[in-house]
Length: 305
Image 1 (cartoon, rainbow, N blue to C red):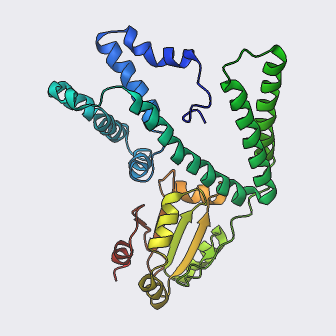
Image 2: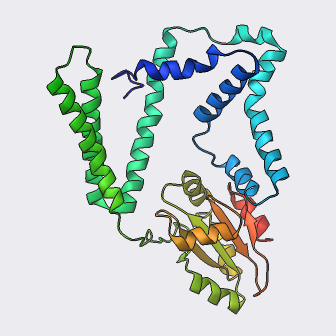
Image 3: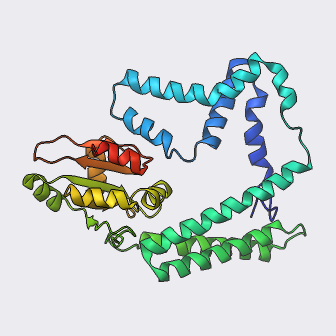
């Protein structure tokens, strides 16, 4: 709504963004770097997630090397312009296009809201989704009132505050009272892979029997997981391979952050998903961690097909 111009965020945030400009030299560069890191890294999936997951399990030297490499990667556009300053002339000049561009960027943000609404519905159910919708309506009304340029009376200001608190409070109350983790229903994929819900006891039993196991750690909010499911696990050849090799497919659902799945992720040195683990035939085989981005050919290669 802010990107559409429905309301504007106060001047103090602009001052916050201009804080680095009040300094000079290395301090200015340092503060600009912090601001760039905060504003440009809201999500680490899918590629950076692997690097960060590995860094948490390594020595301090390796961890610092990984984060330094990430920092150099983020700084590379600035470094390039410092080395080749004539490249600045190719940067677009400020103008009306910035307003239009900001409005266009509201479209993917609205799409994100729809996606998170779907996740909320999966986690809590239809009644929770109704609360979610009502909360959004109240927050939207609040933004409309705040965005009006006319002078507002004290009554309207207090009514706006009450609307905002009510909208956010309804959603927060519903989240706080979320039911105990029951797991998202495990559905057979279109190709017919018969996933079984993961549990520590079932996993131990299968390991003792020596059967090959494939674990898909997923969640309703994981977009990368959804893409892999549509592209790879719905592939007919993958399904035939699972059946011919007698692989037991287990699906570990992390939508509501269950303790069992969290322990499974941490035990393999990761802190996020998607996570794909393959145990070949035998009771003492080592786990094989597959890449986060899966294609049928990559999966079959790891299965040695």
